[in-house]
Length: 64
Image 1 (cartoon, rainbow, N blue to C red):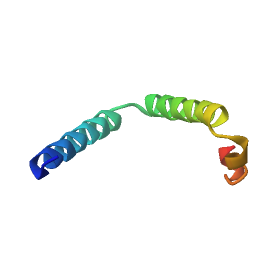
Image 2: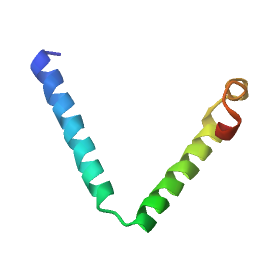
Image 3: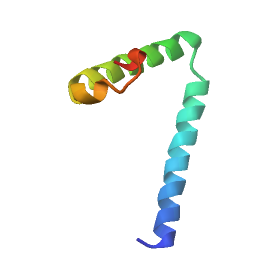
Image 4: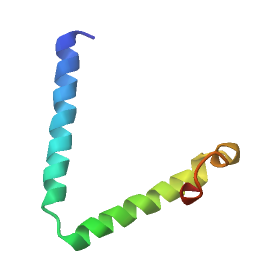
């Protein structure tokens, strides 16, 4: 991969992040809270399904 390709990839990622931040900043408080709770719920499901029990022992209690 050339340096130009890497720069292009970084610029695309930065553009997507900037767009996401812009869209998030335009949401109402209720929409922000809804998105945050959805992310927490999905993260909890992922933690329960895919993280082995041996590794969960090393995580803080609020992440189990």
